[in-house]
Length: 417
Image 1: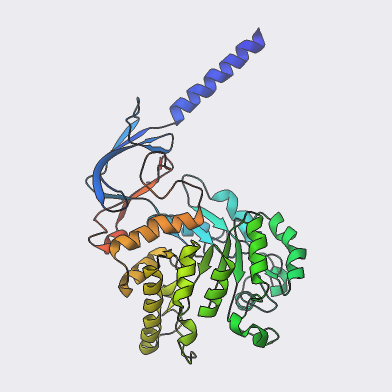
Image 2 (image 1 turned 120 degrees about the vertical axis):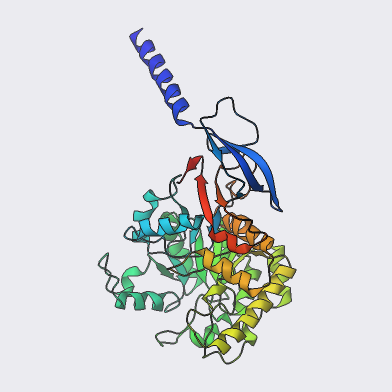
């Protein structure tokens, strides 16, 4: 009898605890984005989920003061969420810009393991990680990590780039290499897989090069086999590309996402822009296969300050973006700039003049979160979706600069102010 009483008391206590912690909100006087325009509506947050139906009990009413409500922004490509030492500042920066969802397409695994327990909670950002990327001997990002180590990466006693092998990169030169290492890669539970294609049209010429910064990646002949195996095991594939040929190889292999677009940076060493102009048939195939593309085009002037070179690079960027837009390719927003957020990329894309304000908003609030969390209901303000949103002071369809005026943030039923 005492045991039954104890069980009943425990059950009642749990129900009481849930009732006082499940806070219901009413949001009134807001202009809510419906995917095409802003409409004056009242919404409710019930147990962290949106509802148009008024709940029986409302714990708090929030007056949105006729401001403009959007789904949260995403960051399709950045490596800044990568260690616990700088995490607090990175989280603060993202939330300030209204960015809740981040995709890190290559990280140092030993650092990522420390970061994971501190994120993906209502009061912080949500991020996913590829861990180490798949490349060839001496291929990107190995030279980049080597340069970083020489610059003082010693937080975990890392003094040689070889220490990062099978951690922040995996060397795959043959199909047999992949088969041998795939179980080890999967064992670390990556959220998706990053692969590298760099100047794949010159793979044979570059593969044995010992130059310190030669651009190369996976063998394009084995690439389709690698992609199919990864996807067959339930993981999505993201691919770094440099040239139009890389883009073609990635699209034909059926990757899920392409990181960078050809001509994503400006270089005085570039002799011709022809290798960076995407072919229309490849754009059509990318659209048909539903491949997401993160241009990271705001990197254009990061490495080159010569205005004429940047201008010529931007001409190719505009042509590529126009082609992708006309063919219905899903474009996302990510900056790949460690010190910035996808706000930088969104404003840069606006400046290129290819997309309308509405198109940019949908790329940033719909396409980008979809490529990060394809199974979550986070891209719309409607019944049954996660109660997460940001509030802007002005209408971004009328003035895109309004995206810099985030005044309120609400995530999974919890206010972030």
